[in-house]
Image 1 (tube, one colour):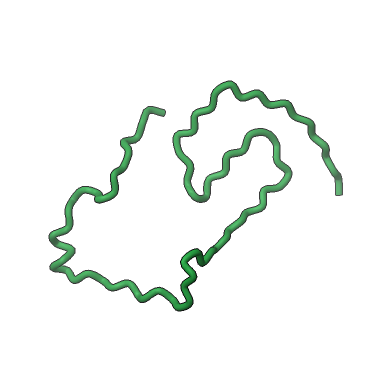
Image 2 (cartoon, helix red, strand yellow):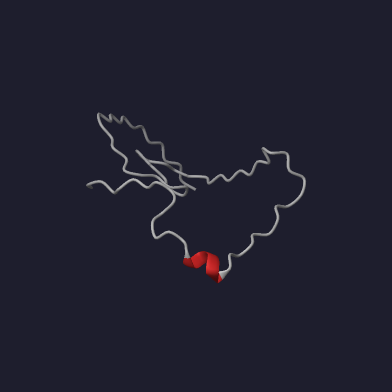
Length: 78
């Protein structure tokens, strides 16, 4: 096994990040290893599983609005 030692000097004067998602990785410079982490916390102190989700009937889904109920930002220029 060969060990490499790398010394870096990085100067970032301006950085604009358009968006990051849950599985995104922003890497600046060299990295020998990236370890993934996933943590689950029971912050509500629940002791039982959540109830099963109920499906809506077809009559309820027909009256659904055509626009999103969550406000979304319009995509910007790249």
